[in-house]
Picture 1 (cartoon, rainbow, N blue to C red):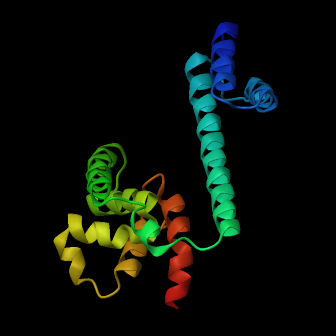
Picture 2 (picture 1 turned 90 degrees about the horizontal axis):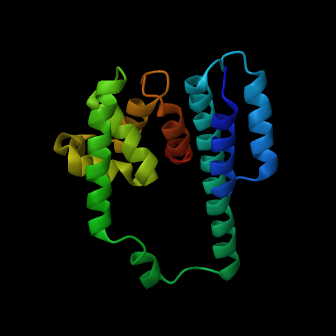
Length: 178
């Protein structure tokens, strides 16, 4: 049985983080009806899934609004576009992806290449091919690096839990290759 103070603690935390009250009420009601929520631990796991999904969707909405706002302002000058992402942060992102990929290999039954490809695509999008080539020099020899990345992150071929999300991020660029 889920303790009331557990549900209240998670609800107040979510409201404090900016989740609308209406959404929090819906989550509490849904989880109270969920057959698989039987104790505090299962409640916490289900709550975190709902909260993570809401945060991803919220970030997606913010990015979409930002893109629409940027399109309304007109084209970005070339010099400003070049300064968007400094090279050092890319190196740090690549190293963070490599570390996360090593942890993914331990936690799920996927190869290091698959885990690294998924992590890089989630961070760099279509620029993941360049990042992969810098981390794994033999990847430079690939004739079609984007296609090779797609093979590594394909949800039917990779057991990585976020492979589907990575493949969806890569799919628009693959359609341009046809």
